[in-house]
Length: 358
Image (cartoon, rainbow, N blue to C red):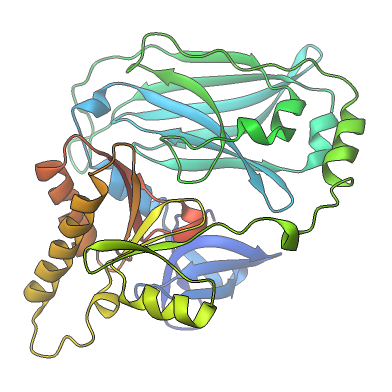
């Protein structure tokens, strides 16, 4: 069982999509209403694998014919996570291996679907000093059809083989974790292939010294407390203009409730398109009227975001049956083809949000 699988419960009614694993032997399952339920893994039966990624796999764009795949290392609670982001119309078979002397150890082998962000594995800080720096990633792009049409005509892409040195000190340098086009959180990005640019940047390397010493200074020698750090300013878009939110939590929450757009601590705009967040009541409105109102607010938020190129804005639409999400994707294709969009950070929003970059 993996994140993204659809499951049903054995000894109770219900089920949903696996969105995380919060305890040893426990899974977090998001039901169709968006509620997260902790359930023992032994009480879950997988009925369909990679449900959300398969939904995204049906989206085909002209730009998506160009391969664009990258590895992203991010900081996790007890170490690091390695994620592969696929921003193209192609599926791919992938292996990730580490070299120890003359032999390789495979850390991941599997398939990534079109427009999927797949966490390959997590690793703790001890692995930074395991004696292996060389990484070999092999990627075989391909396309498959659906239903009775199991084959589809496409341009044959070459096999990608990326052999590089992952210096452990790089993962300790905060300056290498940057905003990027693949995920909504900062990460250390290593491009595997990008046919949109002529030449990929080299993997940045730092001369290794005493890794144990650096680890000690980094993780045991930090003395600055969180209370001493400057808190970021939060902003909100209310009645057609931007305002700075006050530090008082009650006043800030009151204004946030009235805002169409808020800006989080990472500087990313957020718009909650749930009907309950936009409307005090839906009395007298049918589903078509509610959807039209939600799309009007979507376009209002997009108009504000388009004033500055490179703006990132997350639209929270929930999973549900996907009607609002599909309507948003249609709007993006028809009206905002110059923008890029992708699933928002799973860690922050689960499966119910889309991030647009203007």
